[in-house]
Amino acid sequence: MKATAIDIEDKVDELLAVLDKEVEHIQESLSRLNELRSLVVKRNDAALGKLLESIRVESDNYRNHESKRQSIRKKLAIALDCSFKQMTLSRLEAALPKEKKAEVTKRKDILRSLTKELKKEHLSTAMLLSDCARFNGLLLKSIFDLGKTETVIYNSNGDTKRQTDVAFVNLQF
Image 1 (spheres, rainbow, N blue to C red):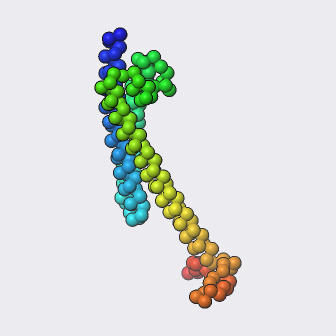
Image 2: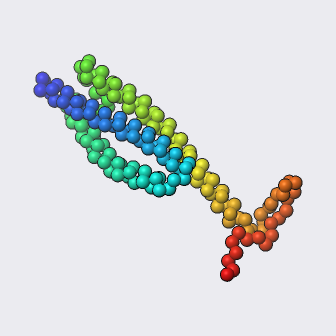
Image 3: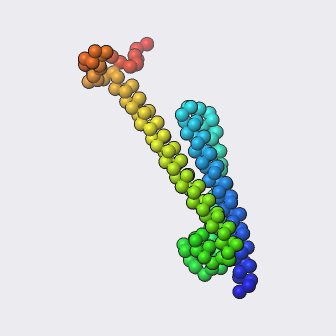
């Protein structure tokens, strides 16, 4: 029994280190989302390409971290005699002594607040990109609809007239 408790505490220590790395990853993700929005607004394509490449590389590295976290979770599930799906931080807290429980609770609270903020920032970024796509679509539609005869044009007096024989691009050489 004593060996099992020590084994569980060792795995919890490993998990705490992994959770600290998880906190760093979420903080970096928040920073990248802010930078992404800034670069989109500034229309800095070169820096945006570099940022997206660094995100791709980082996501490859994160896969290794995620597999390590899942491996520790499996080991803890076996040690605590529960299923993998049941092995949560809340379940772990209930099985730990007071000092380790406090450490797990602290990490859980930090992760909960960071993930809430990440969801909010992700939504903001998605809305910005959606608006950019909508504006680009409207711009392209207005450009390509410019030469059509059914287009209605308003003058400065508010009068309307149909646009005729106007083309956006002259294809003659």
